Image (cartoon, rainbow, N blue to C red; front, side, top):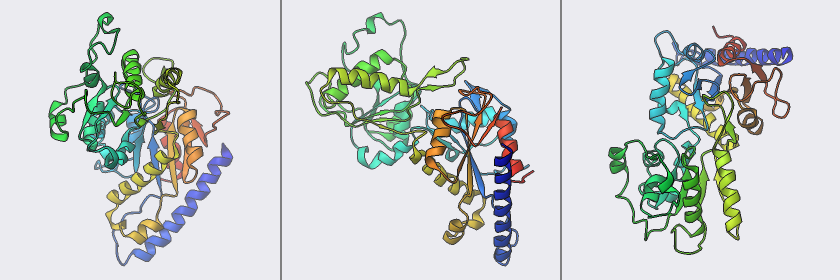
Length: 381
């Protein structure tokens, strides 16, 4: 631990010396320009910042230390979570309320945020969005024009769920009709138009029904009840087997649902299930987060926006603060530099020492401890 701290401090000292030299060369152009940080921070949410909807580990005061006295952002950071189910702007509003600071939607990266990159392929195709919260609204917000939630989709097929008569609850989405009417065409004809893509946006609610309906869609070429067909593309926003929620022990996540779907599908079809998973620990997610952090830096320090200066000032270190070694720390190990990992004991990980399989660069008790360590190593008060 002492060796790691010394190494990080030496690296920080070198970076400060380089920045001071660069600042001296630019004084004639930007005499009043503030020093641009050479590092950024990515926070996991569940088990690090929140448990359920309750802040943990001193997270409000930890986050506030990254802002100036006037409330403007001082240190570039974002939230990098495999969770989701609502548009990023809604999560930003929720985090702002819970943490007492102004969080921008650009600082929220959900597991499903990379679905934006698939818009050109599926923009006008019938698709189904799966999960808790507002999965169809999420996809509509990204620009997909013909999207139905699995709740709405299943409701058009009589008796597609044979257990529905025995259920004593109603599974429904939040009211987002205004958004949907603005973002998409009227619902497509589910009985004649084949589903061209399935997007698992967040953790499914009714596993039994969703497993049945997804097997129907994926086995029949996107048209349930019409014989076998080629499988439409299937995407998962994340692949967490477990995550830390409000309950004391871990809960089964989207990865568990994927295992269940894959096992069942492979038993009833000749060809195995094909799918693509996003979310941590996928290295693509960390590369995307690094690019977003660079844009955040340019927003904080607009005098550094020229192409040459941005190239000269790529973030030398990005700290990932997480609670799940298999997801957060494994992702950092796969991504490599400039990522550095800090593991907290407030979520999935509860050990006294480091994780043996996916060891973090640093292990601390809380996110407040993590931020203190970062600011100390970067010599920022």
